[in-house]
Amino acid sequence: MSYSSWFQAHGEKHKAIIDRLSHLNDDELIEYFRFDNMVQKEPYFCPLYKDNKKCHDNNELNCYLCACSNFRFNEEGFEKKGEQTLYSKCDINSKDGSQYKSQSAIHQNCAGCFVPHSEQYIKKYFSRNWFKIMKNVMP
Image (cartoon, rainbow, N blue to C red):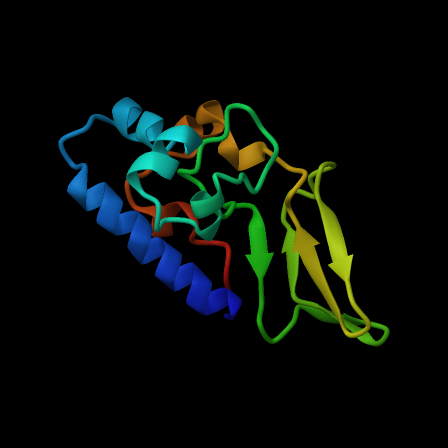
């Protein structure tokens, strides 16, 4: 699956939940996206939920910003670095992020970073429109 197709499909899943929960206030909606609640009530939101597995090893994981607004991708590639093409990166160069490098590609690895998964961060950038929060992710 390409970055773009995942991004679009995920945004649509997010919107469907938001639309269904329009009666909740913003704080209640953010709380709804806590990992433990999502595993029980939205098992199809994330493929890891079926195994009760987290993408980030964080006790207070909130999945509202699954995909980070600081993530950048370009399926054509941002630049060549020798024989490798840089396809994704962190816009804030998080010290907890890393890169996955293959012989021909470089991709951002966000597994060690918790920036977008705290409720404080989510509240700072909150919008019920996930695509609005994520507007800078793709070119």
